[in-house]
Length: 398
Image 1 (cartoon, rainbow, N blue to C red):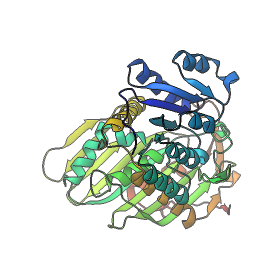
Image 2: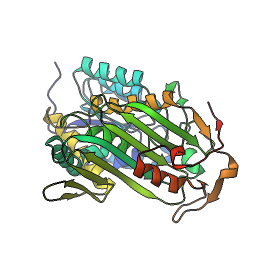
Image 3: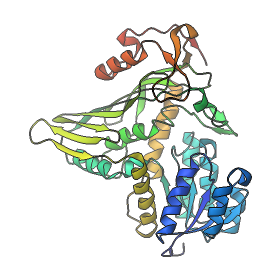
């Protein structure tokens, strides 16, 4: 039987660089409020992170050079392990933490493959601990409110969901680490892409909103997929995907990093008796065919992350407290794997690309001519890019 969680749970952090800096800040804030004890941290590059090292030591954390060392040292005495690492390491680190008796908060996505997601879930069940996944938007108060209203039938039966997002990304984005834009790295599946990384939160939200009740997400199988790349990467940077859940809910996803203008993520939900909208960091709105319009504001991402971390800490003491669990996150992983099976990645030729520097961007971005207009039309019609008349003389990448 697992031992009770102390009032100040014992927390270990794997990594302090890159995206892990966000988790480090969340830990600092919670530590300063007396909500946890940071007992260990993995810092593989202490010479590059002197400020973080000093801060961690001041807070009493023991520093380790590998995650294996930290987990061995705290076996049976670690209540929560934070895994804000790269996708190739999610499964192995999460499983290892579970095996020494820790609960886990792992950054999204859950894993790079269905097999790795299944391994995490099996280890979770064997350990009798929980794994929460860092799909931060699911934790927002507005998400819970919208989910409750959808389950209650505020717009009738949910029939379809559409999500679109455009975030320009230059070459440096795919050079920031060794696994960005890769299909595999470090012996593990990665399937890095806009749908499995930058926009993964919103794909997961769509599946969550389509789930049958508050604690479930919908699964989905791909009907059609268009996958393109303008960057010199293995995977894709532009995609339009149509999928369907076993219950018949239709999904449409359209995303790109090869655009001149930013289009913040938006989700449109069509029901049999109304519709709903989710606009990232703005608002969520329920519009029934009959009855008043309902609206809730949405916080910015930094506040949503704080809500996520607070929820995970509450789950340590309240086993029924909701988090984005592995069952929910595994639906996203299964969809991503199915997308890669459904279509080949096509290379957009240089003749269709203009390198531009969007407003506020630090460097040029490969902008595919006509793509933004085509994505807008495809979003409205829930169709493919080619069905809008968008033509790509593309070579098949794989």
